[in-house]
Length: 239
Image (cartoon, rainbow, N blue to C red; front, side, top):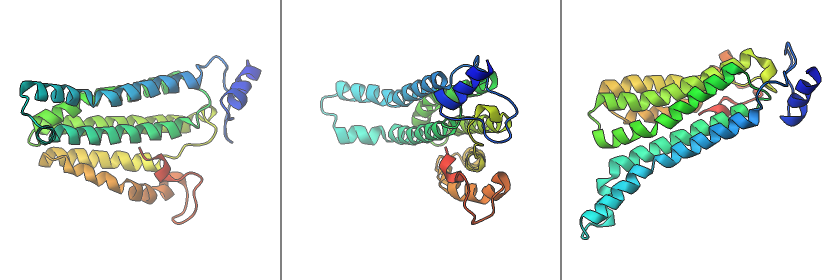
């Protein structure tokens, strides 16, 4: 079993446990590729679902009145188009961070699979608050809270995955950084508070500061000095 586990870590998955590992990866653990492919499929479907309400809306718009124009539809569907664009960017960035994080993973365990499936659940759920946002308007605080709160939940789960991998070094080829994810999660939390307080989606612009916040947190969380090159940049792992 030990030999099979070593083969899984070193050969099949392209990496071995980093220094400080306290065991050999068991060959009976589920292969990483199956989990990653399954998650990728979920993300792709969720991203596709974002546009479907707009497709239906366009169909209804032009069938109701032949005099309806494309420019008229774009103006009527503006809230939905904005919500679609924001959600699509968030999903893509979350998936990108997930992809970089799991590039380090050489084996899985029950806790990692559970956390990953809950993360996927937040991605699958996001099209619903996206559509609610498009229909409810800016003055619905519950809609704002549900929309940004779903994004926050996704970021929190990504952070929990990274922390679990740091606590179980036998699952990864090297220690994953967390400064960028922590920074992004803190900004999502702040955006949620401000968004509900002021009933506004514009607070999501605060996420543009994620790179700066990640660099500020990096010395404390990654053990690097300000200005010193880090093994993995915190901005690299931003969702």
